[in-house]
Image (cartoon, rainbow, N blue to C red):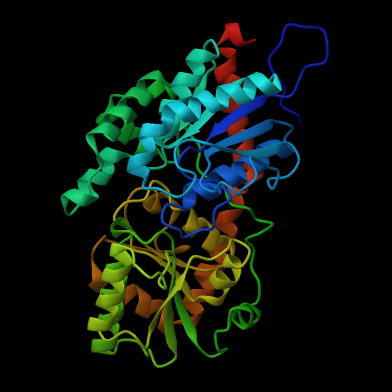
Length: 432
């Protein structure tokens, strides 16, 4: 059913038009880059799913390549990505992008005026986009704002091990302001609802729980031997997979410690086992600090024959990595949701994850995977051994994982988000 703009006119209603803001990272970027991960996939796939429902979606993101087209139609009919100049047209640290928000807003306003566009809803992602949404809403006479944070600064600070990992005061202040001005806030889990209320003083009545979805046409079970052949893993070799950004809060060091324990105590046969870490750029002339630390740690633990740093991978090849793996390991210290877990489950791959944030919500211990305490290498090692040693256990968790993921089809999730838009608009009669 096509979602249309609320109107009192007798003429045919126009499609709902949404300005989707993803300021600091492009939804078309390759997974596993410096600042590309679940949020990129979320914005991209939600925009596609909304467009299929008849909602027009324009995704605005900061241009990071002066050679890239300003308007890209890769999301299919009804959805497009706008690369908006704001500061240097190259990748820069997220902390530096804040200073170019005014330019980002001004260029969006200019684009909308030139195109004669009027947006019904602003849907902003991450706190920086929320700040931009406030300025755009004010310029457009009160366009309602739907906000999703994806990660929260106060939660990041609770698990930070040193000052470099802490969220800035500017971010904390920005998040608090966006919580205050947003008309609706999308939280992926009930746990984040409580975090928003407790840490930011959010009004509970304007928070809606709507989890991310998964593209079941893209992520679905395929034969493991076929997948191994596609990515060059020998048929007899078992694969343990990590996929995501290379940063401290992802807990990759805990995975390396767990593999070292398995090797030292011989509680699983690792002679035909490999560990593949997808994300980052392990071949850069100047390595990222966390990548350098993890590679050095792998060598010091004597894991260079077991662990392969595979770099960032395109979404088109990622399903084969999931399908080729005996398990996906997510040893994160904090995850708002953990979309990698959902993608792996849709492929029929069990997940071992830290019992934190959204992972504790999406991974059902003993049903579609296992939960372990964060930073507990010993507990993680034992669960990895369980899956390596027990084929029947892997097969049972695999079947359950596929069944579980079906409830998260993007068509279902997009229906929930569209309902949030309509309900938000219903409380803004000036926008009718």
